[in-house]
Length: 358
Ligand SMILES: Cc1cc2nc3c(=O)[nH]c(=O)nc-3n(C[C@H](O)[C@H](O)[C@H](O)COP(=O)(O)OP(=O)(O)OC[C@H]3O[C@@H](n4cnc5c(N)ncnc54)[C@H](O)[C@@H]3O)c2cc1C
Image (tube, rainbow, N blue to C red; front, side):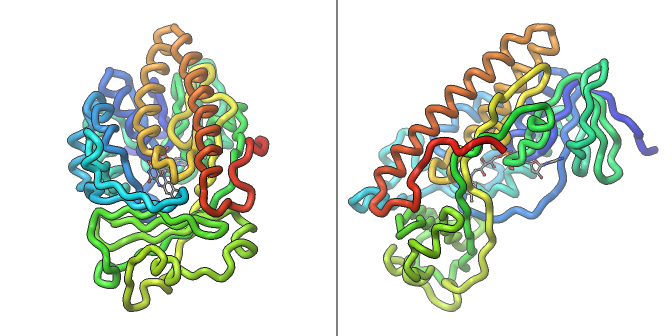
């Protein structure tokens, strides 16, 4: 029998890392939770998670789920970001060099964990334009045949679109625009060992070569739209790999690329009356920071606790969540500015102050 309308305590819109963590935390605490999302194709970008995130995941009871996604240990990190070539082996950190993450497998595992905890998985996209405030909280309609949902509280985990929070009046403040062009290189065409992460500052863009947990490598170029043609001076993927000291064969350097939005943005406020935004919806960070996944875990868990307190009649934790988000976004913005200022070759505009809201 098809359910026409689902009533829950909390609706989590978006089932990436942040949404799954929030739904799991709430469901484990006994709340009736719906988690909505769909299987979208994942692009392998060579995402890393710092080894120091381990205690956070252990505290959340998600470390085993993370390990089950078969991450690959980072064995060596190289970077020429500043004036010297920098190398580290991971042995210098108490938690090792971190992990290269298979995000598709991680998200699949986290969704299963949310279901195990009791969250109701609602397959499909919800239509943010139909979001309404009703006496019991919020109601939203499904875009593709899933039940409409009524919830006492909402969590926006829709990623960079922040579609729910914006519908609730928050503004998305763009720090900078950055595009990633990622190409996958087969293992047998790249003369490099598994577990390598290499950041290479180029002219008007920067490059990232990373080993992938399922084998092979990802080579990405990051640049500000509009600036690359002027600054890049005809540099090719093959030329950059040679500068990195990595030999490739076959058609590796000419493989097709996929484009992704990698710019930084924050929400004007990350929570309100019985709602909170988590992960990229709240604060989308430059991939250079390699902090987006850790923030998705942290903010998902923290917002879940704040929403639960709000449902019990105490709004202070939600207010504190918004303050914490503001402080974090400000610290991130100035750190990003400093890091880009250290580059050998500046990006077209270096890091700028926030450009305004959209
Ligand atoms: C090129 C690139 C490289 C990166 N590298 C790193 C790295 O090395 N290390 C790191 O830590 N981070 C990295 N990041 C950032 C990291 O990927 C993100 O911070 C993290 O995945 C955010 O997770 P999330 O759950 O907030 O959002 P997302 O993963 O974007 O999930 C949002 C989900 O919401 C769903 N959704 C959206 N709208 C709706 C709707 N209306 N109804 C239902 N579902 C909806 C989407 O389909 C999606 O499944 C990188 C990002 C990019 C783009």
